[in-house]
Image (cartoon, rainbow, N blue to C red; front, side, top):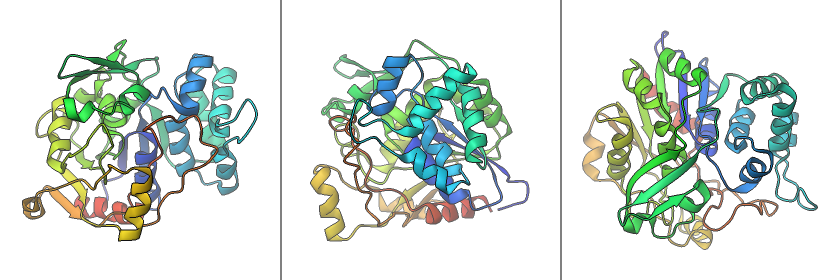
Length: 334
């Protein structure tokens, strides 16, 4: 990577962004995660409803992956298995307490960042409560992240448009980070509820379009049941461009690796209808499409204490391999 390529901004939801950051963290880069803030399910959604705060799970995941305090990260990952706190994550509770103590989310993140001794910054994309609304092609409206994820016919009917209610402005820290970036990465994640909503926040898509940074979109590994069934790499890019603008993305990284038959069977037991994202072989010859084996073959186990997540909104079992992904990203930038 060239010497001037120092400031890297990564946009998306918690798991996808944290995987990207965990690989890039090993290099001398100035990292910023800009995180989606619209979760309505799980521990984050419950705390949001009960305390009137923004959802914290994605922020927590990014803080932990950037942390240099291994002993503390185990504590922050802890999920209660019984009692009234069953299903809640300790890290979410601590950040919620920090919001109460400091008077705001930005300050709470600064405080937790100090405790965890993180490399880089974690920035919420917005600071006001809002929900995602999906308008389907049959004009039915589905409101809230959890309901959109658990809609079994979203990809069958098709999404006409997404919007936020109420409209919210971008966190000024997010705009500033985008303006200063040398490289902007759109991380993999739940497409309609983690990736696209970032570009619905007022000021974000404009800032990304105006930026002189190289822009890289990392395509998902597998389809999301009910939401992106049958999607190809090209489908993801076409829909993303609807919200971000045409020809804004410089490079698309997509996976060409496969799982073993046994590994695929294990995933299909939990997600029977999920498939690898398809791609046209012609993409492999195109300069701005980077096909690579970037799959992590260690299957993620589901935590039995993670009982607040409902329906199809299960944790991802197949992730990108952080080191392979980081090398692929840095190769593009050289």
